[in-house]
Length: 247
Image (cartoon, rainbow, N blue to C red):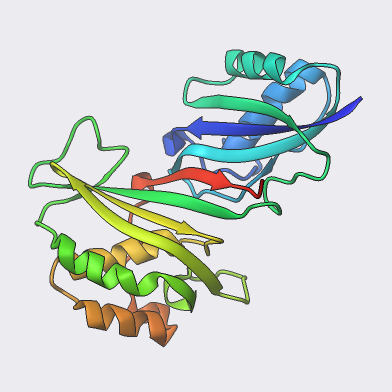
């Protein structure tokens, strides 16, 4: 009996070269596929909602796989977590309709970027937040980030060498929160280009440091010129928080 299973996955991306399977190097997709193969004795293809880069983390990555099996979702949930390394956890496993596809059925995604903003680094957060020593102007970053909401050509924040021809995306919401020394930037959109969030964050940090005004940030967005934007923020501060699908 062929069944379609949806997985909600949490992982620490530190030890992996991203989500997508690559020959000879560890990836999240490959680790989960190997665990499924142990349980089913079948070679199964796992489809993720999208790639995450090397070092990027996830609290709510979504994937699905089809398998000819009588095993239940509850058995897969327990069995996979027993087989996977400690830095990958299946948070939920659900049987879904045959036409569900983790990538092509996506409605929107939410990413969060974390910055430790203080003079001294953090021993505990060093793998999970970008350490920025100089104090950041949160109000200026919020003002600049407000220009991102809506439908835009985000070519200014597209990764170099990307093969995607259409850079138009819709950013549904953006906000900045600060708790003690930690700054959290949340981005929700219907799709993201390669390195897009990290490039936006790198440019917003320049605004926060006073190197660029919010108005200049808007001009960078409108220029569609990657060379005018800021640096690519480190991967280890980025988290894929959740992936939403139509009801």
